[in-house]
Amino acid sequence: MNNLLSSSQLWALAAGDILLNANGYVFANEYAPDKGSRNIDDIKDVLLGEGWSIVDEESAYDTLNSLSEIGHREDFNQTREIVRFMTTKQQDLYIASLKDEYKTINARIVQRYDKLLPESGILAWDLGRAASICHFCAEVGYFSREYAWSYLLNNANQIQQSYSNWIEYGLAYIIGRQFWQKELDDSSTSMHLQFIKRQLTDTNCPWSFLPWNTKLETNPLY
Image (tube, rainbow, N blue to C red; front, side, top):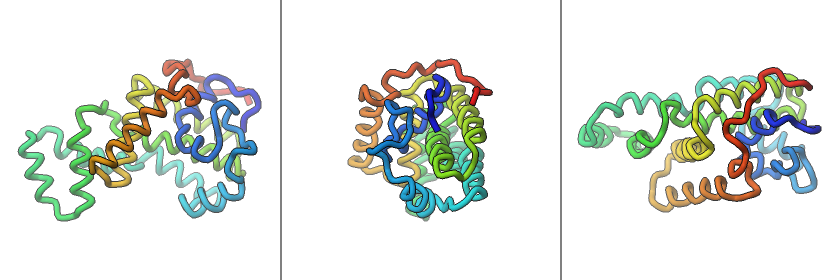
C-alpha cells in the first residue's frame, strides 16, 4: 500500500509504528512488506484472525469503527470522571471499595496518570492501533486502498489535534497499553516507560524525527 507515499500518508502510518514495526513493516521502507516482514498469510490468519477476530470485510470495518468510537478509552474515561474531582484520600477510599481486582488496578492507573494526560486521555492507544490494523487489513485485501487512506488520514488528523507532540502521544499510548494489560507493578511500569523512551529516541523510529505538526491532507491523490 505504498508507492512513493506523501508526507501525510507516512505520518498517518507512523502513528501506528509500534505494531507495524513489531511485524516487520518499517518506516524506512514506507511500511511496505519486505523480506523482514511477517508473512502476509500469518498477518491475515494469526494477527488479524486470531488476535483481533478479523476474518472478512465486515469484521474489519467493525473493528476499526470500535477503535475509533469506543476503544479502551471509554472505560478509562468513565473512571476518570468518577475520581478526577476527588481528593487523593477520597480516591483511595473509592478504589478500596472496589471488589473486582482488575477494576481496582485500572482505577489506580487512572489515579496515577490522570494529571499527566491531556483531555484526550488514552485515545492514542486506540487510534495508534487503529492505524496499524487498518494498514494490515488493506494489505490482506479486506477493503480498498482508497478506503484505507481515507480512514488513515482522518485518524491521523484526530491524533494530531488531540496531542501536542510525539512525547505526549507516546505517553498516552503506553498508559493505554498498561490500562489494557491491567498491570501497575513497578517492574511493568518501568518496562513500559523504557519501551516508549526507545520509541522516542531511536533514530530508526519516525517518532524521533518526524515533525509532529506536519500538514496533513484529507483527500490524498491515489
